[in-house]
Length: 107
Image (cartoon, rainbow, N blue to C red; front, top):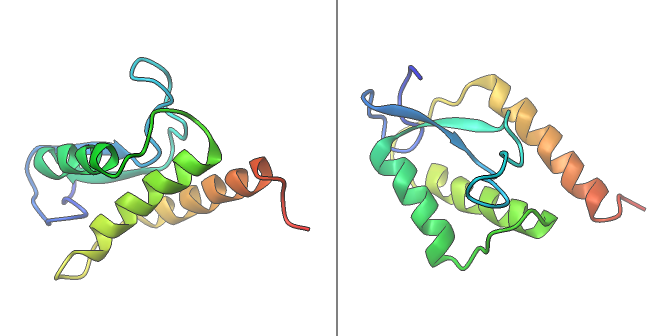
């Protein structure tokens, strides 16, 4: 993947971070389209924050929202403006709409 890390701005060793993760380590991504470019160090750190934050493995809507919150905190911790591909916002909106539907929709 090309570009800069959305957390630290590094331009080397960029990986695609799937913001919702997987239900289990060998399973498919919960949302394969919702990704951010992260360097190896920040990518590992974000996954570690899921573990230290007590976000369990699973695919429940609450797990998805908790993982998105961790990633959002990482983005908010940047001292400099971030560069996020516009497509990430569309994917985020789609993911959140699915979570709302799984939680019973809006009444």
